[in-house]
Each structure stands twice: as C-alpha cells, then as structure tokens.
Length: 183
Image 1 (cartoon, helix red, strand yellow):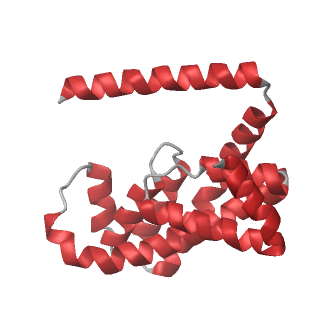
Image 2: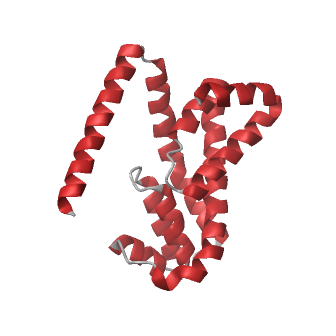
C-alpha cells in the first residue's frame, strides 16, 4: 500500500498535495483510521517540513469536513446515541467560548481520537468557524509530535522497526485482553 500511494503521488506531480489532503479528509470522515500512516507517507515523499505541513492542512480540512457531515447526519440519530463519556457530554452541552475551549483542550491531548472530538463537537452548539479555529490551534502540538515521532521511526533501521512492531503488538494484545476481561 505504501508503494502504491507513493507511486500515485509521484505520478500526480503537483496534484499529489491535493490527493494527500483528500486522503486525509477521507481518514477524518471515517474517524477510526489513524492518520499517522499518511503523515509517514507525506514526510517520505515531500520531506519533513513540507510533509508535516501538508498533513496538518489535511487534518484541519478533514476535521472541518467531518464536523459538517457529522452535524448534518447526526441530527437524524441524535436521540439514539449513548452517553459514553462525561467529558464528551460536557462538550455536547457546551456553547460558544466554552465549546471552543473544550475542542482546543481535547485536541491538545494526543490520545483522544480525532473522530470522537469531531462527533462531540458536531453534537454541540459550536459554530464551524470556532470548531475549525480550535482544531487548527490544538492540532499544532499534536502534529509536531506526530511528525517528529514518524520521522524518527522512518530513520530507524529494520531492527528498530521490528522492535517497535513487536512492542506495539504486545501492547495491543494486552489492551485487548484487559478490555475483554472487563466485558
């Protein structure tokens, strides 16, 4: 898949930036696919600074588009959505400045899934403008951390990448086992 997308970027020439941003929007709409893989491809193809900037623009555009789509579609199913998190509930009940601060704060926490923030904001009374600004500001530190981490991993040799894969796999198995035990 990596080679396919890199080849696609190569053949697209200057349109590769638009393609990357479009892929990021699709990732944001689905809300469960990590964007870190696209960031890695962008850094590999465009270089560190340009790749990070293109990923940032794509994530901001993706957040705005998914927010709009979620808001349009969510009105039809709003009553059937379960209340999962007290923080998500606070976001959905917030308006104006408070909603802006919630979105900004959630974006600054790198472990909160972007799709969850987009969904919570779509359920709130926050405007598109305030959501977009809060997301854009909040994504800066997360994007810097993600791009730096991805760049460091890309520079590792095969042995380092293998160790990272094994450690990640072990963490996922432990997470799955703990979560399954709770149910």
